[in-house]
Image 1 (cartoon, helix red, strand yellow):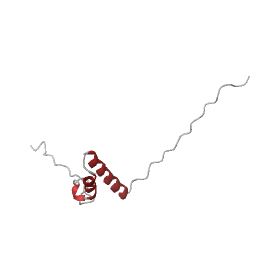
Image 2: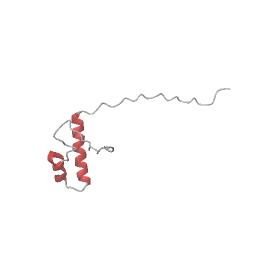
Image 3: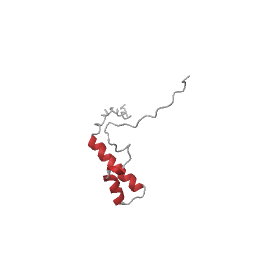
Image 4: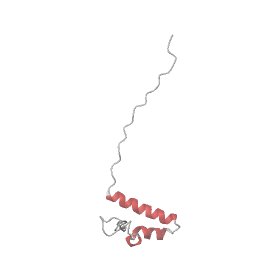
Length: 83
């Protein structure tokens, strides 16, 4: 008698490669695009959204800061046990 059952196809594992890290230019352009989309979603006109995207002074400090290595500072907490 012939074997009538079909063989199961064995799925080979797919090796997933991690994507290349984003360059500074990639991050810059993604930020600009997100600013434009957020302004449009908030109801601003095309001209105002374009202004927000182009004008660095219109952005908050935590997005476009003057110091490239600056981070948001930690708020010092008072000592609990000074006794």
